[in-house]
Length: 185
View 1 (cartoon, one colour):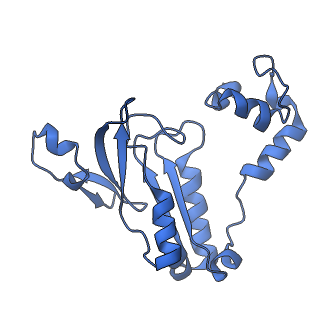
View 2: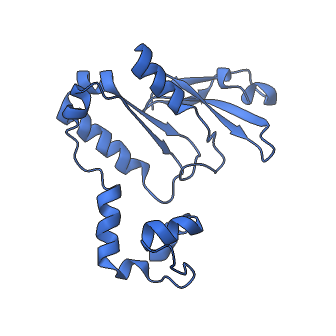
C-alpha cells in the first residue's frame, strides 16, 4: 500500500520531484520512502502547516484553495482541517476577505474522476486581486477527450456542495450547472 499513494505521479515528476535526479530510472526507483533526505525535501515543499498567514493577508494576498473530493493521494479532510485552523489563526473576518476554499465533488487528484474537474481559478483570482471581485460560486466543467463539454456543476465554497434542484428525470437539465444549488451539508 505504501507505494500506491504515489502512483498518480507522471514519469517526469517521479524522476525530478521524488528522486531529485533527472537521470533516475523511475521503474527501478523503489522504495522511494527509504531515502529520508528525499522525504524531508518533499515535506518542505508539500507540508503547509503554518496556519498563521496574516503576513500574506496583510500584504494584500488572496488565496484560492481547490481540492478534488475524490482525491486518493491527499485527503480533502486534511485541507479542510488546515483551512479551519487557518481561520482560527487569522480570524474569520480576515479569512473571509482573503481566502476561498472549494471542494470539487468526484474529482481525483488535480483532475480526472467522474466529477467536473476543470475550473478557471486563475481568472477568479485575477479578478479578485485586480478588480476586488471576490469569487463566490464558480463553475466547474467536465470535458471529453475531444474537448467537448460533457456537463457543468457549480463549484461551491466549502462546506457547501452542489445539490440538484432541476426538473426531475431530465437528463439534459442534469448536465447544466444552473440545475444545481450550493447547499450546506
